[in-house]
Image 1: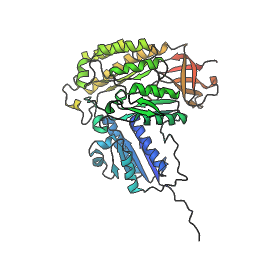
Image 2: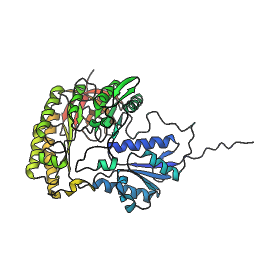
Image 3: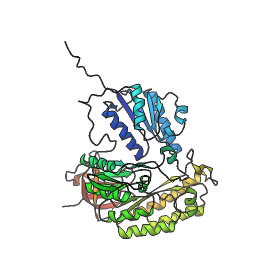
Image 4: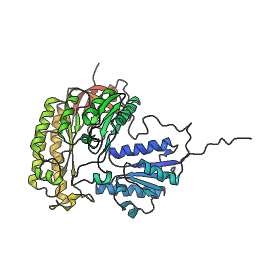
Length: 449
C-alpha cells in the first residue's frame, strides 16, 4: 500500500489595494487571513487564480481610479472580487463591470473570504502554512498602521464615511494593545494610530474598562496612548477630531511618551463655511488651543488639511483661511479643491465655486503655506534631530529618513549623504544634525557620537 504524498499547488490570489491607511489595514487583514488558510499571494495578474481589488469611493477621482483598477484586473485576469468603500455605494461597480464575481463593502474580511471560498476552496496545510504573529502587512517592516476603530458618528456635509463604513465601532482596547505588542516584538519601530475619528475612541462603549496583561485600561484615547507608550517605540496620532479632551494627550507628548505630532484636520477657518460643513466653528477657540498646546509642548508638530472652494465660499471666506494660516503657523499642511461626492449633503448647497477659482485658491493657499513651512524648517538648521531611516538608496548614494515631525508618505523627508553613514539600517532611529532645508524637506549629516 502506498500513500500519495504529492502536495497540491496552493491557489494564488492577486491583490490590488487602493485608498487611505484605514483601507490598507483592511487589506492587511484579508491578506493575513488568506495566508492563514493556505492561499499564496501572486505578485502579478498572470500568476493569479483570481484578483481581489480593495477600492476607495470617497471622492470622484477615487471612484474613477477604483473602476479603472477593476477594469484592468478584469482585462488582465478575468476573475475579480471587489471590496472596500466603492462596494458600499450601491450598484456602481456592477453597473460598470457586471462580470465581477462578488462585491462587498469595507472592513469585510469574512465576506471577502466567503466569496473566495466559493471560487477557490481553501486547501490549508497546517504543517506548512504559517503566518507570523503580527500578520501580513503592506507597510515596510519598521512602521505599521494600528487601526483602533471603524466608522464615524459625525455628519460632515462633504463626507459620506458614515454611509460607507457605518457608525463608530471601537476595537476592544486589549485587542489593540495585544496587536501593538506583537508589532513591536516583530521589529516595528513606529506605530501610526488611525481611524475615522481617533479622538472619539471608546465613546460607543462608554469608555469601558478592559484588562491588558492584568492591568485595567479604559477604552479611551488618553489611556490608550499612555498604554502604547510602554512599548518604547514611536507612536503617532492621525485623524484626531478637536474634542476638548484632546488637551489631555499634549502632556504625554511633552513627557516623550508619544510623538509630539498631532494630525488634526481643521478643514477651514471661516465660521460660515465651518458651519456649512458641520465642523467646529470657532476659529478663535482653535487658536487659543493651539497656543495652549505649544505652551505645554513647545516641540509639537501640528499637521492639518483644508478644503478650498467649498460651496458658498467667498473671497472673504478664503481670505479668513489665509489669515488663519498666518496666525496659526501650522507645521505640515495640505489643501484640496472641493469635489462633489456622490451622496454628500454639500452637493445640495448653493453657491458652487467655479473649478478655475477652486484651483486658483488652492495654489494661493499652498504658496502661502510653502513660505511658512520654509521659515519653520529653516529654524532646524544646526539642530540635532532624531530620525528614523526609511530607505538606503545606493544608486543615489543617499539615505532617506524622517524626523518625528514627519509621517510616512504625506510629510517631508531628511536626506543624508551615504558617505557620512555609520552602518545604519532601515528602521534604525538615530541622530543627525540638520545642514540645509527647503519648503518641505531637510538635509543632514550624522551627529558625531
